Image (cartoon, rainbow, N blue to C red; front, side, top):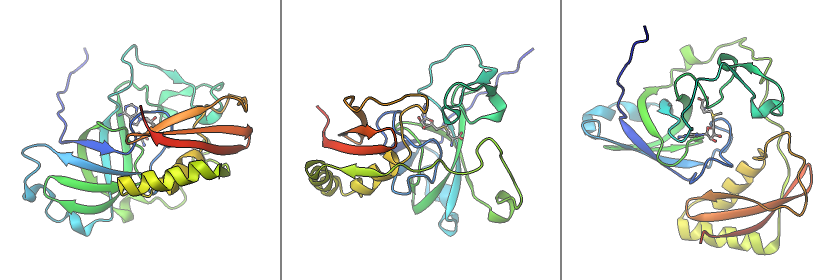
Length: 233
Ligand code: SAM
């Protein structure tokens, strides 16, 4: 007999990532990816975050709220392995899991009653957060730990710009008050497209950061060029 537990969010993420495509596959890969975690009552009281200003990073336990529901996957095809190799679900960080739960260590930039200012996030705007825990270096850093499936961060692709796109990114960044140009470079260098896809140089790819539509193409398989950075229609 399966047991059922009731969990309720302690807050919701307001993040730069307006859609799933283009979000880095783990936290810390785009240090300029910023978010606010808006706490819900009663956790918006100053007492709930007292002491947290002494902590540089927090663990967020959250719900993959934009994953289609369906039968639990026992084996998954991680995008990192090119999408053609299957692993047990518990050997991967895939979003389709027995329960749609994610965990990320993110930088805690500022603490306010009712609001945590975060960076280095891999979280979609609107993500419900179930719990927040301080990162504890002596316990959470494991000397000698290994993972032979994901032994190093993904290799970065060089990101180039057309002169027009660079000027657009600078102007949009100033409008938003955000380091948009750096954020775009950090996200695209991760190569958002699935690893099994050979990109056609004529195809335009796009992602949304806040209300901005970022468009790029692949002049060759190992190169990205940003074409346009405009307010989304
Ligand atoms: N660090 C977390 C973990 O290990 O549990 C998440 C890893 S998961 C591979 C990261 C991806 O989840 C992102 O690239 C994004 O596409 C997706 N994602 C982020 N927030 C989401 C949400 N609220 N609902 C569905 N997918 C989400």
